[in-house]
Amino acid sequence: MRYCLFAILVFHNPKAFSPQADSIPPSVQRLLDAYPDHLEAYQDNYIRWKDGSLMQYDDGRFKTEEEAFDSTDLEDQMNALSYPPGLPVDTPGYNCDPGTLRCQEFFMKMYGNTEAAAKSHLVPVTWLAPKAGQTKRIWVTSINGVNEHLQAVAQELVAYPHLRPYVTNIGGTFNWRPIMGTQRMSPHSFGIAIDLNTRRSEYWKWDHKDNWQLDSVEINLKWRNSVPLEIVEIFERHGFIWGGKWFHYDTMHFEYRPEMLPDQKRRNVGKPTRRPAIGKKKG
Image 1: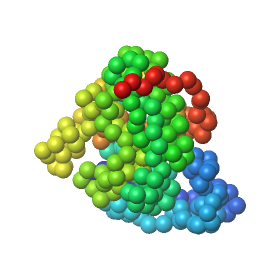
Image 2: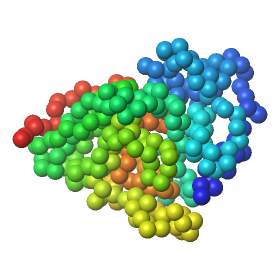
Image 3: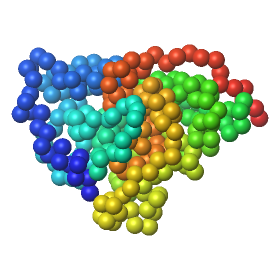
Image 4: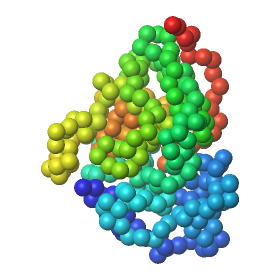
């Protein structure tokens, strides 16, 4: 039951207010700006990739609730709900989960349409270990410099010892799998997501593991979060959105989605800061 999001999908009809043929909708421009290594241009409702292939932007369909999530096009992805960057964080509105509509065709073309293809782009990132001065390796995709952006996050986090318990003993990065209870591929499948310490964060399905599929659970769902918002600010600076800004909260979860962030939040995306190593690897 995602009525807030579904209502926006049903009543938002960009074709009724289409711009001039030679103009680019702002949402499309954000998409082009966010992925300059892959996307080249937009014309006549199609995104042109740099390999010359075309992908339809808006399929023009009015969709049921399930269709909105299972058959997401790029227009749905960009315009369904706006992700609210920065602080303060208000409790998300009922069923408002900005960023959870993902055009699977888009992500599979960009990051890999099979587990083997996605794995072929994985590279290590030096991440924080529980003990100061020690590190570990985690694996994410090198496409779009996601590894560099996540490394920049680690470099900032190391300066805040009080945050270390939240960002060590992490839940994981790459994992080719569908989202729990769905047929849609998780962003972890593409190596663009990280889950922080599961013992210091919350996930609505885990909090209601025996009955999360009941309508009554969603109707009465209470948002929870224990992740310091300093961590959120650091991740957003480097192009990641946070699952704690979803009504269906997933506060351990961050994923690289620069197209969801406004210009001021994306100003450094694509140019990760080069910094010294976060610590000497031991063992």
